[in-house]
Length: 96
Image 1 (spheres, rainbow, N blue to C red):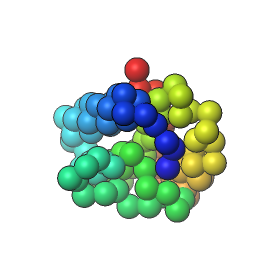
Image 2 (image 1 turned 90 degrees about the vertical axis):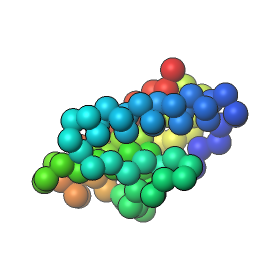
Image 3 (image 1 turned 30 degrees about the vertical axis):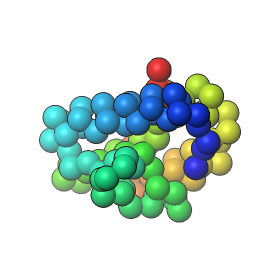
């Protein structure tokens, strides 16, 4: 897990919540790595920020802040490979 300061973590969590709501509105069943929520299953050995399913469609998303993006390479690589094995789409989004 990438280390972030309090402000960076707040931006990260806000973006995760936003993506969760957007995907739910599109009819996906969504799990998000947020406090007080059921955690997503591991993908490539890593718990992603967002794990969304609708029928046979899978979306895995990882949210990074500008400061955490450079140090997240190994984690992103594992998630990308793991998502590909599952036949899903992997996306990285930047929290503003």
